[in-house]
Image (cartoon, rainbow, N blue to C red):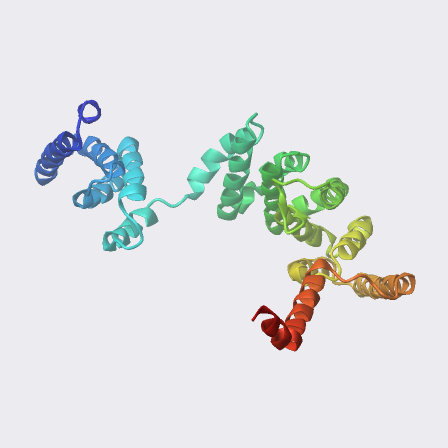
Length: 334
């Protein structure tokens, strides 16, 4: 079919070929042909990408999704993504098939060693996807959390931000379900996380990560959440991250845009000592800002207005000058 369509010289010839193929697919659908159902759906996907209507093949997607074989399911899900959207009522029938194939406990146990191996793969995208998959496995089978403890520790040393943020998220998930893993990360990873956060805060401008003047704020949030989990109830870990928390608070002070950062920083450590430290730093920053403003006014009591203000003043003066001398200028022209 593809060869015949590409050999067409005009749009009319292409429409004729597509019409003929659609008629053959309709006949096969009416005959309920199981052997060629996945091939017919693959043809419909190609026809759909050419811009022709393929609504009559929507039920074929559901039948292939409900099939037992992997090739049929694969084509069925591909057709589901292409041929259907959220406005189709047929889409509600897919939920029953999806509920029959959630990630099972046995499947998670079988896949865990393979996912652990992929977390050491050369391609960073594969490592990132493997980390995300391991998070789903841990949520389904918490007993497997300790198996991912050491691979997750290695992900914290990554330079690729995509892998690093998934590694931090994986460590947070492991700490929620395993007390032993929580103690392991407190002893082995607190200093590493502090160094990573310090590098991110002090990093130079990077256009691929910069959002509103902040280098990768999503990584900031994940790191702060993990530090909150590690520091809560542990004095040594809290002391280790004390300096970087103070630096982060001063770095993002006096900016209403970063309210989320304030929430995260205050929720990291809920002891009175560190809350007082943060409030003291904010008060000190307020005083420094006031002194800086007073110094600027002392150095330049009559500051030069900005270009926008200059333009507004000139426009106002020109308008008043025209109003005052309009009669005189008009009489001179006459």
